[in-house]
Image (cartoon, rainbow over the protein chains, first blue to last red):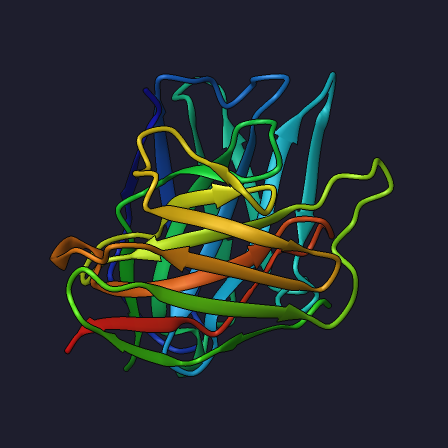
Length: 121
Length: 112
């Protein structure tokens, strides 16, 4: 059974970088079938997909247009985890952030526990 | 991006009765391979979303058969039969046909 454990700061100052990590157990970040996603949820924007990474002989990265200029999703094969970095944050980036796995079947079958990140000075 | 519109936004239901949630897409969710990647998620208070239904009508592992999905093209429905107290929460449709995943705004199911 796949488990995803999120970690990272819960309070970030405006203009700084939001960073979260999702540790994977029960699967590999380098899997040739899985896709590793970041999604966030806020009262104003609802559920919003942010970005993904996956390995198919090489690493691929895909990002939502709304955050494309500010986001990086990066795998860490040595620790079997992947991370989200969102720079130049504003209070509008305050949300619960989730990591989620798509197991190669076009749906998110495993989710992290969620991380409420507040952007405030 | 594909816009998913759910109705109703709130659904008070009596225990043991049924609830239906509609999800309408701004464009067809049929992928080039003929499959339709429309899923339903349940989110209980304080928890992450949980997958219930994928590819319109397939129940995910461990999901009770009280949950059923139907529809095609742009119109989809989630039905909860014989509602139980544990079904309280917010239900979302989501599409993964396009690479940019999008979600409905959510329907809150509560007990009358």
